[in-house]
Amino acid sequence: MELKEQILKILEENRGKSISGAWMARKLYVTRSAIWKQIKELQNEGYEIEAVPNRGYSLKPCNDILTAQSIIPYLKGKATGFILDVRKTVTSTNTIAKEMAANGAKEGTVIIATHQTEGRGRMGRTFYSPASTGIYMSLILRPKLSLEDSLLITTGAAVAVAKAIEELTHREVQIKWVNDLFMDGKKVCGILTEASLNVENGGLEYAVVGIGINVSTKDFPDDIKEVAGSIFTDKPKDQPVTSMLAAYVLNNLAETINNLTDKSYMEDYKKRSFLLGKNINVLKGDKILKAIALDIDDRARLIVEYPDSTKEALTSGEVSI
Ligand code: BTN
Image 1: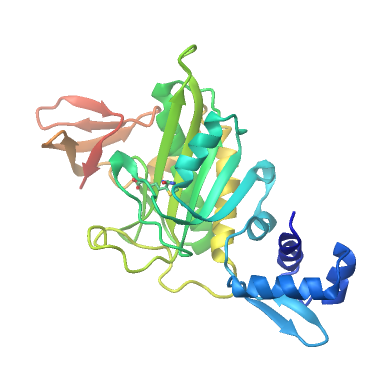
Image 2: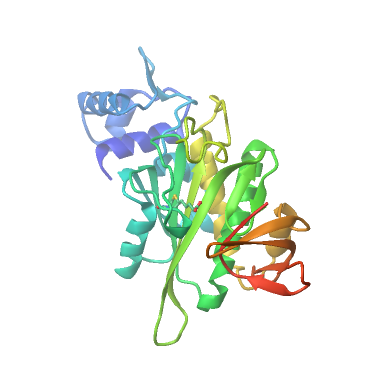
């Protein structure tokens, strides 16, 4: 670990408390001026570090820059075993994670970025990913699932993220089949799962589950501003909520991915689904069909009934109310 990261780790572990430069210098076997130089660099990068004369340096509670050091204190259980790779600006965390997975990266490797220049959504769309207002993360999985069951990954991830947001905000999150999370009628999170097939056994070689959360994003582009929203309009300043949320998501994902096939999370999914029982539009090619959303089955397929009473189990596609 570089000196700067080691200093950040100490400050994170003692967030809000003053740590003397002399103490850090002794602990890290460097001079006090080396510590001071790194602190200056961190401050220039935007870290809210206060220098208190005769007492030392302290990372302010409001500092909310995503780093591995800021997320780790909030990880628990199996998530402590995840391998975190936190970066500033990337093209797309999914693109990077797929490359890494194809090159043998371990299950549980997570790429997190604070900004994406080519964030991708479902159906070839882009995902708006401005700097420092959201969480853009991709988790590499090597699940023992068939391609048909890969929908379960997205569903499991949707429940994991919904619960994490609820834990942080104590507000209700709804899920629009299959992968969009809504709060107060606005989409605050999208999930894009991309999988690679093992041609020899027909199972999955790897899957990358990409999660984009608008934490405090404002000024959405015109084409999405009616539907997109953020978790916070005013982000709390007394806690590093972005780091906490990233950790809560990982904590829940670590639980869910082990239970993908027992489908125990399916009830939690259905409970939050806002399509069930409603009249919906199903987009099929360039046609829009009217239907009623009846159920979500244990393969996460949306069961719809058309006006002529025929039923269909949808595995993908676009539906709207
Ligand atoms: C959607 O709403 O259509 C899915 C959006 C998924 C966005 C996330 S952000 C992290 C990861 N990297 C990407 O390029 N996309 C996913």
